Image (cartoon, rainbow, N blue to C red; front, side, top):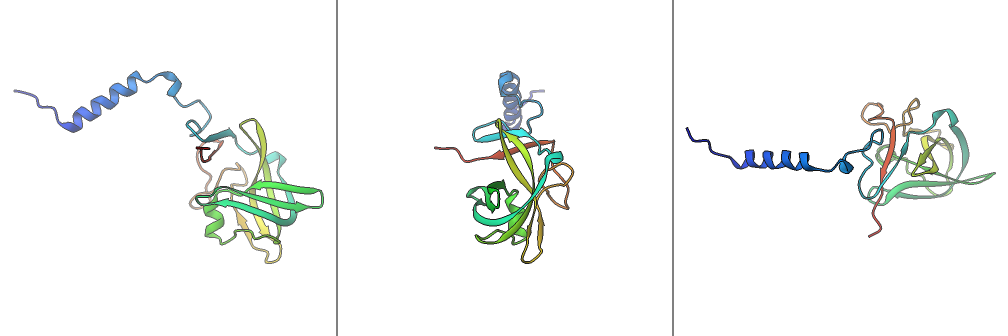
Length: 164
């Protein structure tokens, strides 16, 4: 009996051969989530033990869907503080995008990303309305998804647009 190769079988065989021949440098580093590739910023998860609550007035809010990382600058008595308000989808779903001049309370935790410390918001409360929007799991600091469950391994990874 003569065996006939189908296009699908040929494609699968070619893919397996390509994977076997791939250099180890293409393998994902241990403990870094989906952080390899162009435009990736990687680090450890937020340090919940160092979380703080800061009150102030929204000075600016930039970013959002298709516009880069959501960054909030809050004017406080001790100076301006910057926070990453992610995931964007949680803010948009709650209709909680901060406007300039809004008084907010932000609970945030530090995270080291590419060797630099940043502060990520766990939740944000509009002090005028009392509305709180929870962005991250209180125990892990990972972004919420679905029914309030954290996601993936304890890593922090944000895709940023390339400069080109």
